[in-house]
Each structure stands twice: as structure tokens, then as C-alpha cells.
Image 1 (cartoon, rainbow, N blue to C red):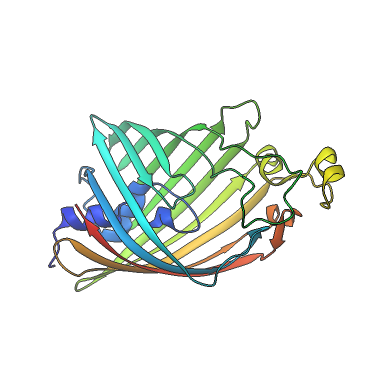
Image 2 (tube, rainbow, N blue to C red):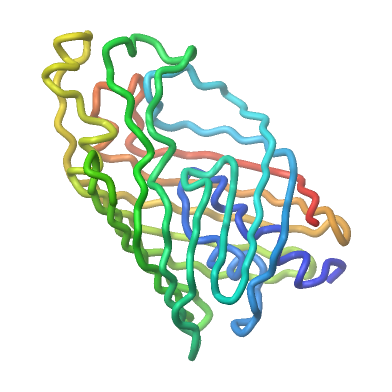
Length: 277
């Protein structure tokens, strides 16, 4: 392989976080790169350009067919503490502590948020009268382990703010296949969001409905799936190409009138070229 495990590990550590569904960087790193189970996490910084397109539900905004963007992702690890960041991810900044790592299993304590909140912007129409939704800080636990050739991960997070103390639970399984310098990987996950969390972000109160043209809406608990199939290819010691396709569901929460486009099943594709430090 023309790219070392260390550099290749760094290059894809948070690539999946920039997709439509967000899971732990360390799991993505391992299944994307066929990393040894005993490998220690690496510090790195990556900058690149990505081109993506998604056909999915949208929150009362005009979406472009193609999105050309800059990716800034990285990870820093120190004495079992870690910080993961990805500018395009729903959880753009994750703080954590690895409390246990032995016998192919690990347990992390994570501090993060479920999304970017909801703000009135120029590209959003008819949002006058709708209250802003703040990013909610969440605290939780994350278990990662190996079962045969598969990697599994279970996460449970609880909101810490009075505005939204909702819960997110997720389960993910993934594996990879190495073909010469090409590394293919697949991911499948289920995510549960409770009614309180969905109502905070997507609900429309009676007061908001009275001030706008939106109908009242009360959020409910949802269970959705997400999946990805991707390939990673090292162009050189420092440059990396990757491409992924995505399929998932958006049942339940996309019934909110705040969505001007509703798709129960979303699809997408993304490609990027990145430089790894």
C-alpha cells in the first residue's frame, strides 16, 4: 500500500461525520481503513474539497443540486481524552474520555450536541414568527467492539439543558474489504430520537402557529436507519481520495410543517480529495 496506515488512518478518521448521519470518528476510521484492533488513536488534521448531492427532506430552504464545500476535520488524543471535530458534521465538535479499552471492547464518555440548531437565515422563507432552536448539549456513553470481522457501536446521549432534555440512542455495524490499494467499507445504523427532542426541533407550538402560516405540530419519537457504502484510495503519502453513497430514512420527524420538502427515503453521493497533516 502506497500510504502508511498512520496517514490513511488520519485521512478518514472523520470522513463519515461529514455525511448525512453522524457516528463516532474512531469507528469510521477502523472500518474504512482495516486498522488493527490494537492500534492507538492518532492525532491529525485534514483539509480538503468535497462535492456532494443529496435528495432528502429540507427545512424550509432552497437546496442546491450540487454542494461544493471545504472540509476541515481532525482529532486530538491525550491520555485517553480526545477531541474530534468536523466542520460539516451534525456534531461538529465532540469531547470524550475513553474509560475502558480492553479485549476488543471500549467504552467512551462523550459530550456533544445533536445538531446545528435552527436559525432564521436569508435562504429560509416564511420563518418570521418561528422561535430559534438552540444547539443542545448532550452527555452520554458509547460502547465499541469487534464481533468477527464486523465492528459494532452503541451510543446513548441525554440532553442537559432545560429547553430540551431529549434522548438519542443509536446502534451501528460496519465492516470493510481490502482490494489492492482500494479499501471498501459498509455501514448500517439505527437511530432513535425521543418525542421531546423531535418536538423541540421540529414541533410548531400554538403560539408559533398563530404568528405564522404553519399548522401546529407536536413531535413524536422516531426510529430511522442510515447506511453508507464507500471506497478510500490513497493518491500519495499525503493526498487521499474517497467516495461514498448513502441511503437512509427520515420517517416521522419530516412530517413537521417546517419541512418544505419531505422524503421518507433519502439518497446521496459524495466525493472528496483531502490533504492530511
